[in-house]
Each structure stands twice: as structure tokens, then as C-alpha cells.
Length: 425
Ligand code: S3P
Image (cartoon, rainbow, N blue to C red; front, top):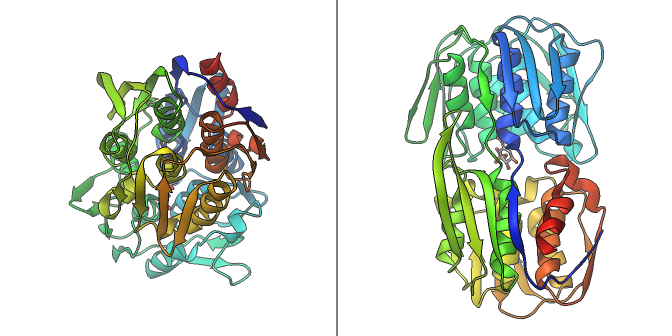
């Protein structure tokens, strides 16, 4: 993929469905009784992996142009798959499905691509085993492939060492099959889509500060859901609109759940001109349209409780920081190392290649911004968020940038280059 400097960006972009919410809608629909109708479903490769896993367990799922219908069979309606479930590149599929599979009456094996086989699964294996689950890493390295022999589960009160919605959701889903109330506490609040959506399906879930509890054995009923646009996808347009001179863009349908909206808060803190319009609620999630205009940004400190609310946006924020005056410090973000790539390393090596003064740290990075960047050969490392962040850097930098394996954007935003291009013309 080759991308050159843009003179200005203008126009409107409608953001595709939220990845986290699309996964959950299919999963919760599958284990509910009756039909779940999902509109604006994200047809990215990750969410298609979730669909294929449930189809292999006997769930009928119809898909037509962003509309997905899941014919749910209830908490105990899944059947044993005939072969290994393929989770592809998807951490969300892997971790959430393990919670469901641990409480079934059959055995499953899960595997995915090279990247997923390196991502840490011990963080879910440990609490699931505390619940009496029979789950193991086939190679004994705490990663996929995983084998799960379904069994009766015990409820636990789990203190998670990481703020991770995937860990929290995995335990809450296992809690549906447990013998009492299961609770999870986190060091900081992570995205709460599971809590909001499972409640709408009929589960009894309580949240107090950073602790969530769930009652077992609810009657879950199919729902009609409209998936809000993904703020993680909107992030690239927020960054592009702020960085490319003379720009004004309207970003429509952006989910602004407060457990996800850290990028907006940080962009404002950096001096960004962002206006929220048409605030509304869609299927229990707050949504708005954003107007973003070119801005002179300045550096900031990003740390603490805001980190889980923008963890996937840090590559895009790092690009903003590279063009901002002064220094930006990102800390408390060691989770970046265990995403689709080690995003401390991949952001630092790619921004350095474009001429940025950036230093990696143990839990983040320090970016001394304000210098013009130049086009370079960028490696996506097959990480969709790295490819999209550096497409934005390329628009704001001098000259031409080549992104290796840029097509990996199909994981979360198949039409990304098309939508970005439309604003540049
Ligand atoms: C996700 C949670 C986050 C995020 C990932 C999607 C989810 O991961 O990075 O892209 O859908 O629950 P962690 O839970 O590992 O922080």
C-alpha cells in the first residue's frame, strides 16, 4: 500500500460497526433462546471468526450486507464441533469463547493464526481453572492451541491483575454456568460492553466501581441490536482530521461509551478541535457524530485509569503526538506488548523510520514531537491498527510511504483505504 502527503481532508465518513460489540452480539445471541437480529454488524475477519466458531457448534447464522441473524439455542444448546475451532487472529473470540466452552458438556479444541498462538492465554486459564474448568494450553506455553473439556463450574471472586475486558468477559461468561454468584474486580475499569449487552439479554449483572458480579443460569432471550460505529476505527479519522492542514471532516456514528472514549478526551487535552453533535443512545450505548478540524496539537501525559479507555488507540495517538509540539509521555500501558503485535516496538520502529524522536519504555513510550516526518517503508507487522495508524502518519508526512502487508486492515475495517481516500479527493 502506497500513501502520499495530503493537502487537505474534507467530507463525511460513516464508521463501520464496533468490533467488540459485534463479537458479543453473535456470542450472546447464540446462547440465548430465540432470534437475535444485528444491524451494522462489522464484517471484519475477526468477527467472521466468531461467526464461524458458533456455526461449527450448530448455531444457524444468516448474514446479508451488514445484517446478521443468529438463531440462538439457549445456554445449553451448543453442540460439540466436529473439528478444531479456528479463531483466526482474534483475541476477543479466543478469550470470550473459552468462558462459554468451559461450562459445556463437550470437548473443544481452539486454534488460530501465528499471532494468536503467541498471545497470552494464561490470564484466562488461571481464573477458569479456579472455577474448576478443565482447560489447557496444548503446548504448555500458556498460548493457543487450547483444549477445553467442558465441566461443572464453581463461582469465584476474582481479582484480575490486569484491566482487560477480555479477561473480565471470559469470567463473566463462565459465571453463567457456575454454581453461585461470580465476581471480577479490575485494577481500572475496562470496556463494559459485556455488562451492558448481557443485561439486555436478561442476565443479572451488578457493577460497583471496578467490580462486576453475575448470577448464574439466567434465561437469556434474543434481542434486536444496532451496533454503534467503532471509536477504535474512528480514531484514524480523528487523528487524520487533526493532523492534515486545512481539514474539516464529519465522522458519523461514533460509539462514545465512557469506557472507550479516552482518545477524544486526550485529543481535546492536546488542543484538538473536536465537536460532538447529535448525541444519542443506540442499543444501550452512547453514540454521536464528530466534527474534527485541523489543529495545532501539543504534547501531554497519558497514564493511569485513562489507559484502558484508549488502549487500542495508542498507535494513532502516538502518531498525533509525533506531530504535536513538545513531549508526550505514555505510561502504564504495558498491555501494548501483548496486542496483535508488540505495539511499543512496532510504533517506535515505524515512527523512528519516519524521522520521529521516540524512545520506548517498559510500559509505554516518550515522543518528542513537532518535527516534520518523512515518508518511509513501514511494516504493519500484520497488525491492523499499526497499518491504519501509519496510513494517517503518511498523509501528514512529506513524500510517499509504503505500508507492507497493509491489507491486514481487513481484520477490523475492510474499507479503510477506500474511506480514507474519499476524504483526500
Ligand atoms: C477487547 C478488549 C481489549 C482490546 C481488544 C478488544 C474486547 O483487549 O484491546 O481489541 O473486545 O473485549 P483486552 O481485554 O486484552 O485489554
